[in-house]
Length: 237
Image (tube, rainbow, N blue to C red; front, side):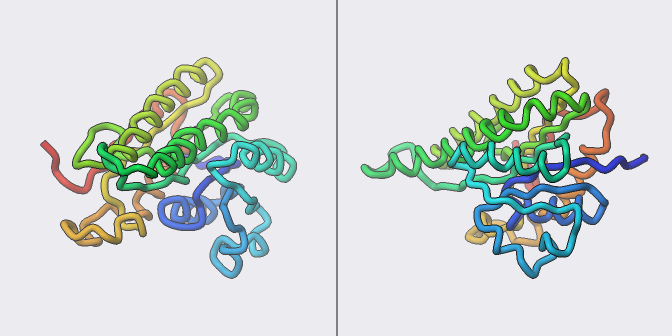
């Protein structure tokens, strides 16, 4: 399959899944704009912008909608256009259904980061994606956006909302050639899963494998881009 370099914005690229995706796409020759909370964290790494002409690192805070617009504008100024957005930044929380007084702020933060963050980012980038004709949006949702297991009420609610948002993005952008994929992994071997004891890290989905899947998504033509990609490292009934 022939590869055409894309110009891709990736949030949450300083660690975990987002970082693995960024490293993979950079190695494949794509132009990348990375939005991270602390750009200095990437200095001296494989994603150091001083080492790559086709790499921009820009401050971005998913909970702050103003940073999304500033990041998009900086990306367009650097590369001339944007054709893909990968929303990987997210927040995990164990807030239960019967949350304690004072945990409302944590629930609000989940909504701002996990739902409004991707929403504001895609909204800011939309004119660029629509102008391309084969725009791509990839959102790291979660299996928690498809079903509820355990008692993670706050996190699960935010991911269900994000899945619904992805469906509407797909509806809205279809005629303009924008294709949306919601990637829904279960446990992934990242810092978020460090406390999991029921499953060894080697049995979890690895960030590099999700990066490989994302790379493939960017290569597919408009006629066969899947909307939902469920990736589960365990068997569920």
